[in-house]
Image (cartoon, rainbow, N blue to C red; front, side, top):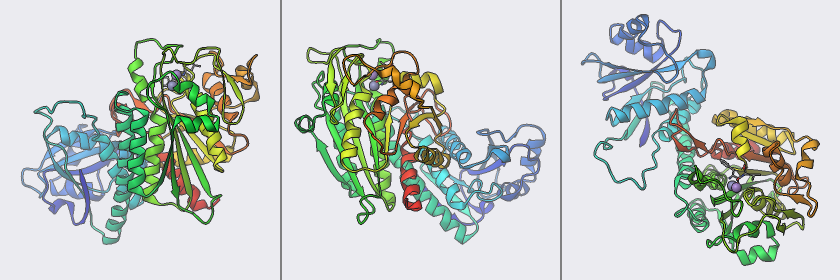
Length: 504
Ligand code: BES
Ligand code: MN
Ligand code: ZN
């Protein structure tokens, strides 16, 4: 889809469909919606009076203009209550509207910059939210579907009309940023939706190579012999059951080459399929475990965004990619592995593999001199039980960095909630035979997993994001489409920008 911004007046712009908006509780629409209402002899206010238009978030009303104004149709999109309005509402509504137009077979439309007037949003913010919402809402994973006859028309052109020249160019900047964010998020979604016979560790490395080449990042791939030399026994223990060679993918963005200490490390879990290994998972729903590389995909996507946005900070993305398979060469429950920092782990449950591969990836990140670490992982089923799909659970050792992640999420609309790391929980991973065990049993499963990771970050400020719930959506709603979400790629890129701007 193409998104453009033009200067003009909405009532005189020829288009198959003009999108305007309405806050709930408003009886006499103002701004552009008011102008359209007057040009249509008050039909919108009439429909509000009759209760047909309520302005609830995502509500859509279609009005045919029958030649009264230049647009052939007017789409009134509900924005909800004015006091709950923000960029996230614009994202969600833009997505619902885009899918509505597509379903009606309308392939071009004009919209006002939602919220940039009465709503109080910056024009840039509005433009960005419209672009992100429309592009992400129209997302489809159709690689393996034979082309069907009905699925012909797609919304191909969206034009944002604004009267003021300066505001129009601000909206344009926002649209450009939104396109960058949406395209990278779509890359993450595609990687996660891709079946595991296609999205192997080798394929993840290939996609990282393409991103690195396009955005001018340095790429380094470690193969198992190098991992062995570095002493990555925890990662290799997981990989040993699979025929697919593991890859440690390292992507480097140098935005502040004169200050190597001004850096951020993003570490992603890249289990391209998680069978559980010898501690085999139940077959029901196991296909969802093709998405166990969502953390890694979001890191690659964030690196793509960062490469395009060019913040003044150095960012390294590290993705530990391997399958977790049962086989004659697979690791066994009870095995003890030694990670890169020399610490030993008793493998109680081979299905707790994410923390094992991350242990070595985090050690590697520390050795590289990274001064702040964020890891992203579909780590525990317990997180889905705890927080469901509304927000990601964050844990860590540094409140300031934790707060910065939450704050970045307020702008991207990706939500975070912090879980405690009280010392008491640490006992859950005590082992009789090794420095720790990889499973803490049924209590506080997400927190005990974080405590294992904490053993490998030392005193480096670190945040662990458990995206087991948020990496996929059960149904299509707003800008999320059933399947992969791409969370938290946009937040990671926003965090890099915020850290670069604060210069600390
Ligand atoms: N990849 C899973 C966690 C997961 C579950 C992600 C559901 C998304 C949806 C992880 O590797 C795993 O299997 N964790 C185990 C840990 C347990 C054995 C300690 C779990 O959560 O059951
Ligand atoms: Mn597992
Ligand atoms: Zn897993």
